Length: 292
Image 1 (cartoon, helix red, strand yellow):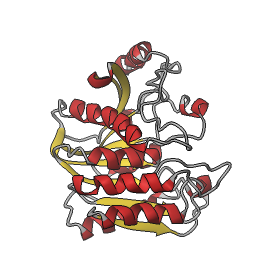
Image 2 (cartoon, rainbow, N blue to C red):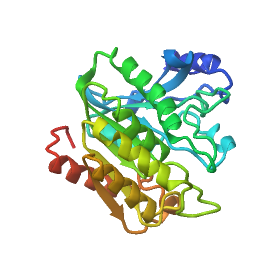
Image 3 (cartoon, one colour):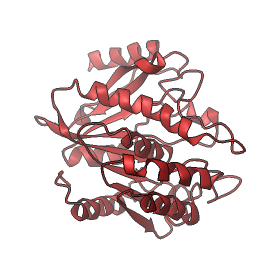
Image 4 (cartoon, helix red, strand yellow):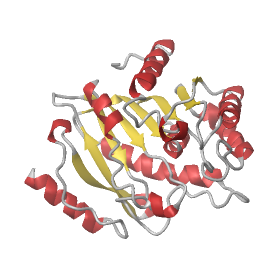
């Protein structure tokens, strides 16, 4: 444990303008570890946290990507994105969980956000996707050095902007990827000023359509009806644009969910039975033989 505490301090020292990372009690039951992972294309490093089952590998694994808050200040305070409800669920089911914090956010820090799309008036969502993909692909390359991870059985999993990042990264066709699980995926959410009405939904739809046939695996698109970031109209537009352009996947729209204004199904304990049921159905529908 002492080694892990010192590692936390070392990561804090290499994270540029990241918020301070205090020495912390890492969760031994989850085999929690902190790593500093290079992103060569950006001449930067990001903080990545790993969690593993208490068993022998090789494990199936997921790269789990965080969302984006409405303000830059909030994005800089997400720490290592320790979303423990879904992390525990994945580990319980036998998966290793790899959680990168993208450049600009939380523990990784940096002056600019890797996945900024600019403004609602002049958004560049492809730039946002490319920036996020740099960090996720660097994380995947690092994961390939881990001997206890099964390189033919892994998933991209993301919440909100992390779902968008996961879908976009899948268009790069990383080897061994089996599927994408995207929970409330999208960009442009304005929950405080325009609940349910993300800005510039049409450019996002066009982007999803443009990468649909580049994605060789099925994608689960999972939303709640009352999502304050991404309402049903935008969610359906994005999925239907993706599918019409040749993308493979399934769409799930839950009834209104009480936590986080409908945007918190995946991270919340109350949402766990809902998203796990959807994933199990999705796996069966696409004959995915990963454990679940």
